[in-house]
Image (tube, rainbow, N blue to C red; front, side, top):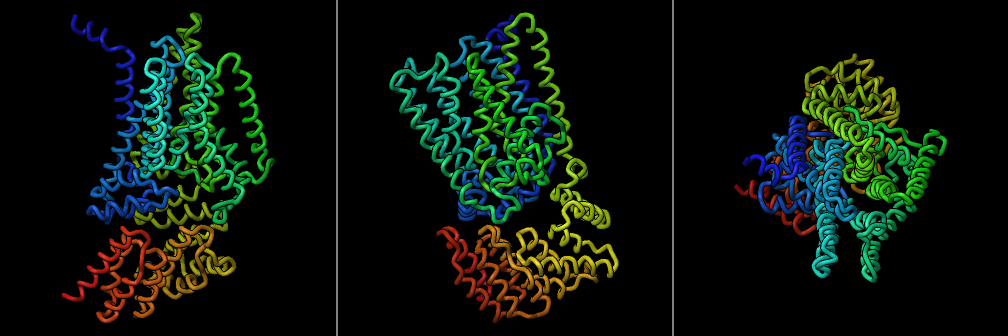
Length: 634
């Protein structure tokens, strides 16, 4: 009797959600042993030097991953600094917890939305549960959770969903308590947008997403805003949405950031038409290979007919829009799902000079398509002749998706096997090849690593990073090594501008050349390449980092030849190019120890003249300089 009372008090959909939530966390837990991924270290390396409130504050406020710096996301990393770099699993567990929270938030948001739209609360809850479960278990968005640095995506989504939930909670109370309702709507939209954008810039799209909800779902329904209330609400949401649109247009017209890309803004727009269809296919027909972190080999559209799928995809989007508009006479849901998907993709899939494709970009946009799928299922269930088979089919479909996610998470949790499989799945991806090649290098199997990069070079014959990496494999005779070196030398002299990856490769070769690693690799060879090269000037940040790499490499070679004045000059130039206090902490004492006492003190005094940007940076820099100076006074 007691258990029967409990079942009556707790609805079945709550039990179903709890089971799904535990299953989701259990599946993702298989991936916590996946370790760090390619994009983690460039963004998180400073965590190794976070050990007090000053370093926490500097790490939090010195981000460069986006125009706003993403301080909220960086703060969440800084609070876990003790686990870096030895314990990536600690970071991944927090990511999994955030994804579980977002599952709950999506469920609650869609439940409120369905309650506003349809009077049948039971149907609304089951529809929200199915849509949120399909979203949460989608393999395509798995990299958003299992790539540590993509916590930026997760946290921004949490704040967007939280803001939308508060807004909809206010909308639900609008008829009975208008003053309280408008306060909740204002807080949800304003604070949700501001906080979400400080985690990742996509959060700035919250007003546009709310506008989609208002105009395409609530306005055509019984829950529309009445009378004079509608205009100020729509206007308040439209202004920030219009500001983002203007920014995207300016970025496209001025081709901002495209100098360091091998495609134009028009080529990117043509390519994104195909990319967005690929996203939808990967969502609705998932496979384990869709969960790969490596998609840098996506082919660029060079024209409407190159490839012809560029034109077909654009016509397909036009047809989808016309069809969704035509279907309004029966329902606005298809148009809403399409608008949500495209609006949520508008920052990362339009004119901004980002890489072409990443699965994690679908984290928020994919809610729209899954909402449409769940709505279609509920419409079919409403028909008695389809109810049984639609119910069975819907949950079987979810089960298949969960099994695919299970397979992908298991693979992700075995990084050695994953490196091989991801390279097989994306054989033209440079990053996938480098990932598996590095795994073989760690096993002292340079010959296999060299063969992998040789095959990759066939797909990318002019890629200087691959050629430089092959110089680091001491597996061939001197004659073949010289041929490789000459090829690199010719390419650098014909095109001296080297990007950040290529300059990092030269710096790595400089460190190898002064060791006993390979007799063929001599310091004067790398010195010649460094002197012939110059940093790519396409983008200010990467130019700065590449300049730093170049000068540090030259300092390494100068130290090897006991040219102390040059070593000091190049080290100062490197730190002046990128005056990061964390970089000074990492390298300052080592450089001082390499110099004679007189030059070491002179070096420290020159460091004191360098002034990083920001008061926190200057304060931390001065503290480290004082520590180095104190070493000479003891």
